[in-house]
Image (cartoon, rainbow, N blue to C red; front, side):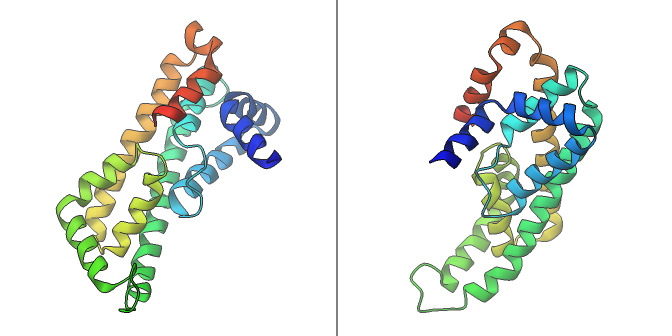
Length: 197
């Protein structure tokens, strides 16, 4: 239970923890941001990591002069793309190995065929929209790989989605995070971002 409370404190007071990390470790904050976003998007087992709130807070700290906003956005876009690609290729490799068991009720070739058909019709929209939906954004690249969505098509939509996600949330934090109403209630704003997303 203690670990859950510590994680909740980290999420709710992300601005304080991230600002403290910037003050103590300087440029290494970019590596931390990369690692968190990469893991959230690239590893199927880490959808619980903060994504939207992290981007907003990073923009807020950049506006206060703690980080360079262009570097922040560049690092986060690259992290999101790397995570998506790793997740896609894991799905692409795992899919054929797991779905060849016909006896399985949940994992059978018919489900793989349906997934492939879905991604042929709606894959691009799904990749972009999922970027803005926590937890879902972790699984969509994996399922796109399992469903054998053509890689270049996946990559194009992944680039568009990553750019839209990172730029919108970082710039929202950059331009609105230091407004008195937002700044004085940043913890509540972060909780709202988590709840809305």
